[in-house]
Length: 526
Image (cartoon, rainbow, N blue to C red):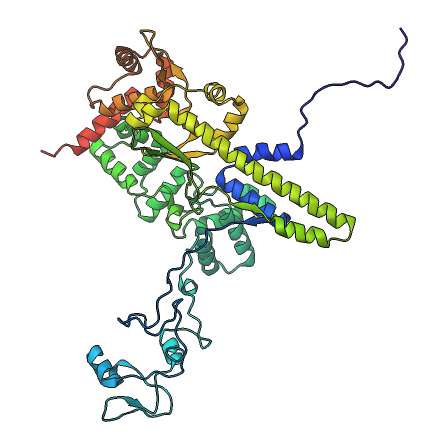
């Protein structure tokens, strides 16, 4: 059979990932912050899109009838503005006697009358020669001469950052330009907690500086406030603070060099290494606890972004649950069709018409994608609430095992779609705010063959058991397995150890040593 090239027609079906489809998939997995940033870029790119910030503001001053008998609205018209000839005039007629009686003092003690004109009070008690100017009220309130109210935010002190605080001290501590350059490079490498996260030799190599000189500048910065800043590890941070307190003796040096033993509360081993008794070790441990392991946290860190839930779950009057989307997290984007029609009618060139048509198509597709995203999130959240209603009513112990396939089959979607929807989405419930992925957990079999338990519920039971144990009856992993089997939970010891590690709970030996040490410290001295 001869091999040759020829043209052939073939009919087939294939899924083509168009840019619009890729955009819709991206929108599903965006968090509300990422979605807001994406829409901000689209609003700048597409002139036919409009962002709706808020609803129409209601009129706080409804129309009032003219000539109200109570006189409470005197000086204002139907929309709450001053009438012409009242407050709008340059001077105000003031009854000095009545004003002095209300203030409880003389007029001269209450108001400083500026200007070359003299103010006289006639026999009837009214001010002659000068009224109270509207500008004088503005000047008394601290506003500028233009009559605008002052900007109070201009007088609020900015929060000082750790880097700025260290840079100010470096300017006073060093006069050499090279040392300042090295010092600024070291300060830039200090993280928010106050630790130096870059090797000092690499900083010296990058600046083509002498490593010995860079080390000397680092020692200078380590003497700055806050104490312990620019340390490279926890031991050096504590050593700097103890050295400034003149408490870094040989015994304390050995104590700081064996911090893992302190974490385990192995005081007898520390006493043997330091050559002191256990009472001295307890005093040294108390002194170390008074130190600051993160000296940079006093200056704050990155701004904390508040968590906004995408879905809100509320109990209904009939005992069910109401699931609704959070309107604060929903973007409000509209397509201005009237503007599109007006611009399209005035377009002369073919390129302009193509641009307007493309912008209109993209805007319509974006709004449809946002609407589809909202419907999908609501559908997935409603199914999660339906399956996890016991958790909402009774707590984490009643959390059921759940996977993506169960939700996908129930709502008729693909697992990948459900995975994208539950990514970086949060649900506000009466029990707190949870990520949607929190409700998905593996199943733990029962000893009787009944309904399986959720891994999160089992993890919570393990934590409860460990919190209730006494210092002299600490549960081992095998003992926890035995107790779980008593309540119909079939679990292996290695699984208990894995769950315990995920909860950051130490082993039974370390817990026994720590709890007994705390019991001795809290016991009253005889």
